[in-house]
Image 1 (cartoon, helix red, strand yellow):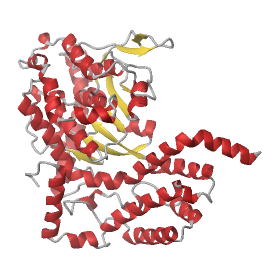
Image 2 (cartoon, helix red, strand yellow):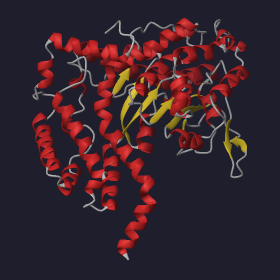
Image 3 (tube, one colour):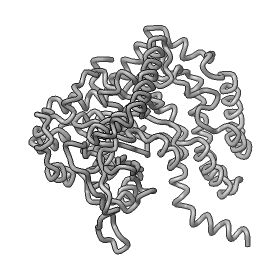
Image 4 (tube, one colour):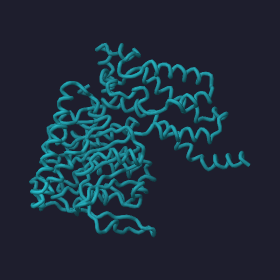
Length: 478
């Protein structure tokens, strides 16, 4: 598994490992203390029986009463730690049966149920079931790890339609969010990415000495001009169908951070948003945003405001994504060195060592916050120290966990070289590290997102038919 060069090689090795280790018996057995297997088995048998009878109304009723995320504990992370590949066969079979039932209800063979009734069901099911998002952390020049993660997910068809990123994560998110699938395949080849970044060799080398005065905004702007077309968030969504979200932090005091996307800020330009999210304080000056006006012309957006690195305030904007898109399943690509001691591969992992480590982290965070509160007034006398303290507290108090956390095997990165130039060999190594870190999570992601992806696919197809459906409903009503 460690020597695999492709996901197919890794998968074959993982399956062989499961067979050799004897864990296949666990996979085939329904029993487990981590989920209500008797309820899932009963639901599976009922769906199979109704689908075989082609009782469409009964199938719809059965799904209506039990279609939501993590039903009967089926999404427990403990169910994905025993085997190297996949999980209980009962869970996989149930998910496949639900998907087959959804396809049947969406097809013409279920025409004994009015289409408007089916459409209403699919929309309610999508709302109840929720969806997944990929959140990419701030990364500096380690952003190539995120590219490996995106590449692995995209090649296997499990890349979520909701993406968020801050700093380096915003750069990668924008590459995916503004290019369609045809361009993406070519772009994600390691050699093409490395060659593109080699063109900006001088840009990253300027940070080698860690001196703020040598950072040049125009160099970064030139690179982003090549990589990101001059489009708004709304135009990017219309092109790709992917929801791109970029985190930015306010440069001024008393202002709050923002999450830019096609819903909250549809007319804001992506390029300036990414530039702002990557504006590390002390290295880049704060950035002004731009937006398209009602005449289609580019103009300043909130001209009196300036914005900086989004990872300082909202590196992983889970709450905002939940509110805007109904996201309830978070995949995190995490490459920030300063949080590695506090992050495990799944947030619900609870072995003794992890429990002690997480508890120690929480206690340390509370002590730091208490100390900052006690020294708040003395710190206020020195604006520079006060600003640094506030930034540090913002970073410390963020939540860096997801339902599935994709981390590098090699975690020894020097934080002082986050903006340092990377050679072509280091770039390819980081991309491969991202891919290999993703491979063990792909089946978990596939199983846990298969139903939501099928609901999205069905609704996209039905939405194209909606004008005709409305006309049909009107004729029946008259």
